Length: 423
Image (tube, rainbow, N blue to C red):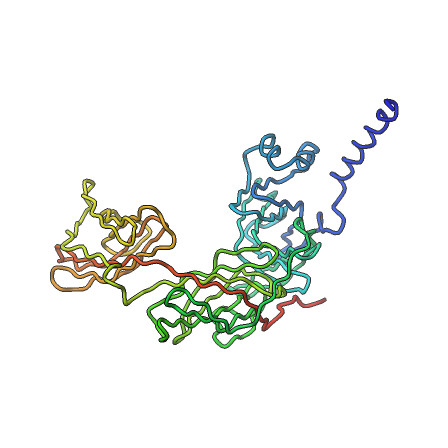
């Protein structure tokens, strides 16, 4: 038995080395695509998790790849780590040639539908010998493989040319549930609000109120249209401020491309978003009030001095609205905001579900101050106003109000497969 184990151990080590060093079957590791100016991108590795390290070329780096995530974090270098807040997939591409040549990575499912956007990227190494790590927290998970396509950008946004593609083995391939849901329209009730999802259309171009097909996947969004009623009456007092989307395979995308309105219809453009080949999506749409506030939501600060230079010993003013401590913290300027005076507020405890709206700002001469811009976080708000230079004081009225969320399980429809042309 000892003699048998003596011969078996080297064979096991050799088999392990073959697994590490041999290219992954069914994938495009080592393949290269070329831009029109000769710049190249070569797929070197694919990693999965929340901490991504370029495996490197050495045997030690490849051996480290076999370790569990906890041991890998212990023994591997803490430098050059691409960290994501949610589990993600990262593509490591070696760049040859011009570092200024730009391209976009599009993730395509088995139907050929491509989704773009919402990635983190970092570069390693000197110019001319760089490795780029591109991390996405969403990807097509239902099939054993999917396609990563590379598009070269044109002169204007939306102009793009397919220059090549890679086959990627799915690191989270599994048997996932299949959701079933009806198509729009669907209505959800949130307290005294009724929110109707009128339509959900994938493959349209940005700003396409008439559902015009996108020119290519890097220009493709999903449009969601909503109508809001309060107490049975159509209302324009509420605006769409956030849309999250997800599917049955575990993709959850907590961001959107933009929002707008066309008459009584509130619309959102989702980029990125799940793949429409999924039989159903979950949507979570947030709506925030913009007018018609209750007295219990309002706070008026009278005769606030308008300082040429904000004093450092400002006295904080505070009130309690809806169980949240709201404080006025002074006029410290934020360099990235326009406006000649900035007024700052703080919420305690921090709450992303609450929003602060500046309802009115009137100076001591009776002139209204115009809002130029604002900043928000879960705990801080700042309003940048253009105040009359002759004003000595200002009355400010703000409203603290809670975002309401409507949830839908819905079947999307596709206006364009956005499948790449076949050569």
